[in-house]
Image (cartoon, rainbow, N blue to C red):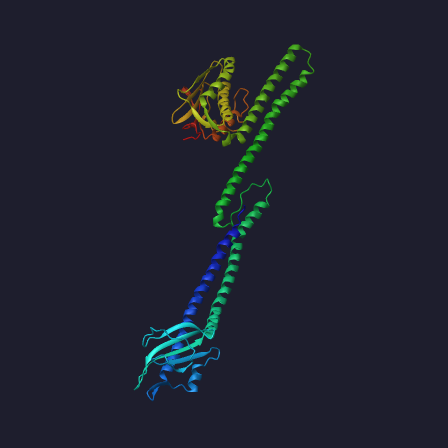
Length: 464
């Protein structure tokens, strides 16, 4: 399932903003309710104090001197219904609404009590206070005042709306800003996509990073590195094709020339010479084609990790040298193979390693003069080392860096080499993380090719 960065950012930010809005609304409602209730309760206690202030003692009895004007002041808000009652020390109703709820038995003197109760099917807020009437013949009384909660509820709702509506507008603006910001942030990615999509398959130039965000720079750098490798690989293949076409053209042209001459010859000896030249040309072309296929195979998928396994280099070198003994004898060369005393275990692709060994030994046999010697050694230690030592003319120091190029041959070199053998050696060595070194033999005569492979630690196929 593909993941959208835009959706992830919106999913991350929107719930946070909405959650903050809900939390803010809840906290605001709680604070508004607490503050408004405290304010209304103070007004209710003031009403109770007003009733207490109107208490009088007449004829030895406590009465409440509440004229209609005073009661009208207490009931100033017509939206809510106001109740009051004064109870004597024995619980008798002195004045007020007789159907008000009974006060609590543990009501303390001078300490007001507030509660929310139900009266006549309506929710009311009641304030009760127990006081002593400070007059001769006075008694202890309880004053109760109550009012419905319609006004305070409406006030809380309006106050909450005055807070929530601006917050909702801020939330909406925030969501719009997040949406716009995410879209704006992702715009460079869209431009980068359009830049890459508009390219042709042959355009492997670097992607411009001028308008790319800092966080995307590593991605662009990785893409440019990939394009650089592809560009180098494409250029190498183009050079290979051009060189291969040039190299094949020469032996094919020679074969065509000799075959044309041969059709017009009647002398048996001359015809035999032409056939021999054709045979030599075919051998040369076959070797060239074989080397080209080997090189192409070395660059191909056969060098991937799935084709590699643990192998003993001794066995491969032994097989290769055994196959080339006949060629060494025909040239009057001494071909010597010295194996290691211990298994020379390396992790690699068997066909590629065989091509590497074969090309090194064949190269030594090809350029070593008749009567010379070629020694092939396998040594163990911190690394597995393959050494091919010959008694040829040696390689000039200035040429050592060039001999691994494709189709490159040192000026004045004799023999029928294709110029691809050492290129194959280099490709195989790189694929196996091996190091190649070239040294001159004793007395600056001959060459020593040494290839160091990482040594494996066991049968798990992992190198150390």
